[in-house]
Image (cartoon, rainbow, N blue to C red; front, top):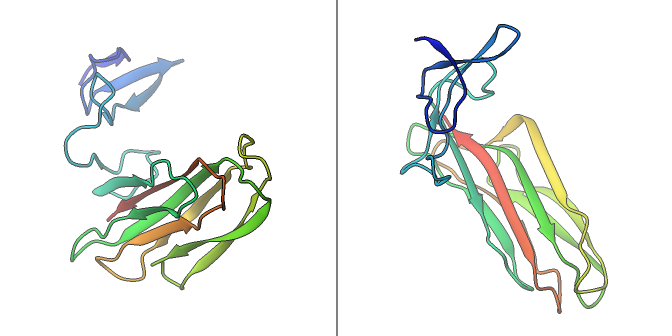
Length: 171
């Protein structure tokens, strides 16, 4: 296919695009022109530098905003012949009425449950330090057709905002 400059909405999957100084890239469409996600999950091939194995399906999940409640997001089971992988997560939140420390967990991954510490500041309008983890190599699910869940318990009374986002793939 001919090499072209990247133009929003005009490139097609499989096109190559000129990045500058003779560099080229394979175009991978991950969103519709209006920014919405395509129906189903996008499939990533073994494009050089994609970071995903051939045929992997990129997945993610979010707890949405929760107030003084568990914030959990799950990389779903991929089916009888697929394994789910957790590549990372982001947890962002506001403080609570009283300062505290809670323990978040990653369950369903090979090797058993993993824990991480989340300090909570006193002050409901203050932001807690975000917890961001990236796994390289990714954490595999304990078995085929198994989910991986990342969760943080309630941050306490007065907390109005907590959000967990997970990232991964199934292959």
